[in-house]
Length: 277
Image 1 (cartoon, rainbow, N blue to C red):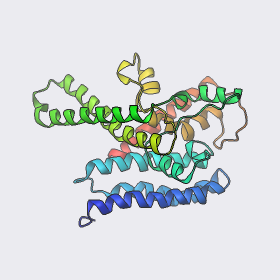
Image 2 (image 1 turned 120 degrees about the vertical axis):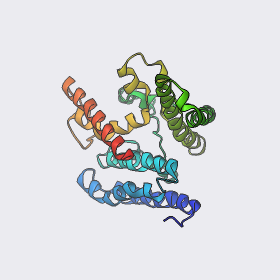
Image 3 (image 1 turned 90 degrees about the vertical axis):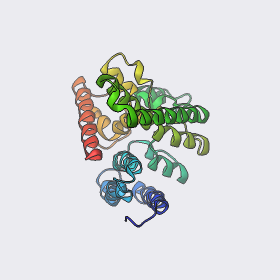
Image 4 (image 1 turned 135 degrees about the vertical axis):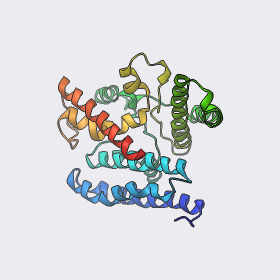
């Protein structure tokens, strides 16, 4: 792979996921939710786990990390949620919308259906999935602002890290991570909003204003991951059923809610270890 140009690698990173998205849309979605969909999706899971190897982790680290985030984590969990008849891929989407939601690090907003009480209840219970992440112009401004912050942070860390006090350095690392994730998510989100007409749920909600760890992790930091974990991890535990039956339910107990949140933290930790391993 060392002799393959970056352009060819980039093309592969777009074309093969398009084939996978077509397979999921045409084949997997037609099967019964549960084991039939899960078994049919195994080749897709396998490709997603191998996708980061398209880029060299030593010389093309940023591209490798982005594919780890998009495919190893987000794509796999979106497809897994689909297997359980949950998540964004279960919606009625055009082929372009389906591919974009499948491959991009974005979560479409859970839109309200006018005049339906059940829809109101569903959106309110969906947490940040019911919030609007902003229009295309606002997302573009965020993208450029966070890109500028990222460039400045990398410059400071590259040339002056040894002169910065330890505590200030830790804060700078946190700001750099925030800017990098915003760079990776706000750009695709602006294209999704402007080109295919889907409203996007927010990626972050001003995490620097968090007043507690609960507020920081649950309502403000990296909401794309939180929303991704909700369908295949939290909701099945909270509802007590893996496959969504689309029947009204009273909701789980406080213990189920605690177990669901704990499971999300465990799965998130394992995925972080897998990506950076």
